[in-house]
Length: 130
Image (tube, rainbow, N blue to C red; front, side, top):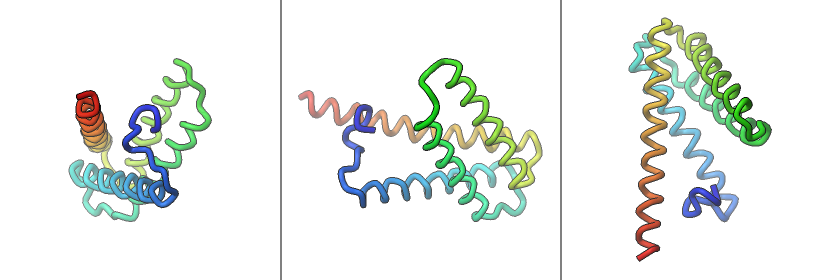
């Protein structure tokens, strides 16, 4: 975070807690919206919270433990996709096609969030350069 987005890097422990809570709540909402869009009949928000916690713990663990190599990154991407698909299907009782729709909606939201981060970073970079 310090290297890529220095403007987002927290300096206080309370800011780290706030950023973590923002990530957790945003990811929970993204998961819940994707499951509802995919057609889950009774999507419980508690399951979305649990799956968001699993996603965040997996992301933190992989950031800390997975080496920076092509095979490791490829294996991580395949494993994460399989884990997400099986979790969505098992927790929410979605059909296979609906599971892929839910995952596509999640990826779309995350791509949008990454684009907003890049936009803000480039705007702040252009202001600082001038």
